[in-house]
Length: 285
Length: 170
Ligand SMILES: Cc1cc2nc3c(=O)[nH]c(=O)nc-3n(C[C@H](O)[C@H](O)[C@H](O)COP(=O)(O)OP(=O)(O)OC[C@H]3O[C@@H](n4cnc5c(N)ncnc54)[C@H](O)[C@@H]3O)c2cc1C
Ligand code: FES
Ligand code: FES
Image (cartoon, rainbow over all chains, first blue to last red; front, top):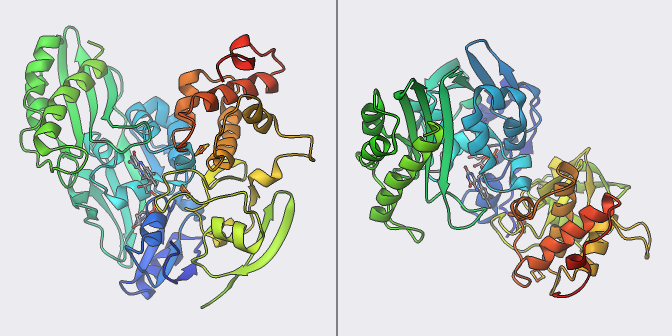
């Protein structure tokens, strides 16, 4: 279908984009890669009065090394994120999860910031930002603020950003030596969305697991940490048995839903099984 | 409704036009400048039938606005052959290996394959299947499409074609 008519602006700076958003009242929509927004417009599920194309704002692009963390511009495409030497070195979990997003053509346009702002419960990248304790920087008419990933995703397709704020960048702490990573995605087809996904970072020292961070995709309206698994793994033996025992609580505290792809109890089962797989792989066990 | 001026280079020619902001690149290609080789197969950016190259990278032209192509270069299926008998090696391979049946997915498959081979000139079967994951084919079962990409990779690298790509079970 053809989208409903809208006006179009293409700001080249962040302040111009914020000004356009404020001027639009509540009717403006940011366009980043368009890989979620264009289908929504074509299906006429949204009818913004003005589309604010942020894809050519240089300050939203690129990845930089910031000492103890890396900073990724919201407008950096999935393709550029997964091929960035800085991301591959310091946040390989993000690179790995991004490589599972959609397909190459979509990854050429879709952006990290768009995927986080869209907050699709089946999106792969919110769980990664959550597991890695990412911080999201947003800017609005009243200035800039930082939001912890744990406070950013609030509900289905909903974040704690105000209507007139835009996401500018994502900061991910480097995890340093001793950490292993894995993103395990359960999907029906190669290009499909996650039925359940597990983002795991595991720290080992000698024969033990010293710490684990686990984010779950599509187990609630927004991504969740598998906190009880993390607690059980802290100090656990690095064995298949110990990891399996810990992963048995992966569905605790989740709110999985039933849809045409999977029933809620099947999702809970998957969460346990693939949390175990993800932790074993991340921990090199 | 407001019209926005654009200037886009498509298959080597520059077109100056005015478009409504909501015009999708694929609709502009088909309806304004006659590039009907690029087709639409879905409403959800899933099928890949509309794949073109924008500045050399594969994109789904149903998920890009025509205004966003302003100042950029687009290659469609109609810009690949250099004359009637001088097809792009990927086009020639799809013909040789019978990589199509109805042909609806083929323009997108060919352009996605070109993108794939640009990034990975010697892909494994698995890498070909993953590289084309965004392009759906309802006819072939993909088998001969994978063969076509292998065949094209060999041609482009100047290698001989192994027997399983040149005869037998097609
Ligand atoms: C067929 C298909 C398969 C897909 N499969 C997957 C998958 O397996 N896993 C996955 O994670 N994703 C998948 N995606 C979605 C893809 O990752 C999108 O790229 C992503 O969800 C949106 O990013 P975008 O840059 O295209 O954002 P857009 O579509 O441009 O925008 C999405 C939303 O976010 C808002 N927004 C964008 N940027 C900002 C910003 N900087 N500040 C504030 N608001 C902003 C927009 O206003 C809009 O509401 C798929 C998409 C398609 C079409
Ligand atoms: S028509 Fe563009 S992906 Fe289906
Ligand atoms: S040949 Fe018919 S859809 Fe692919």
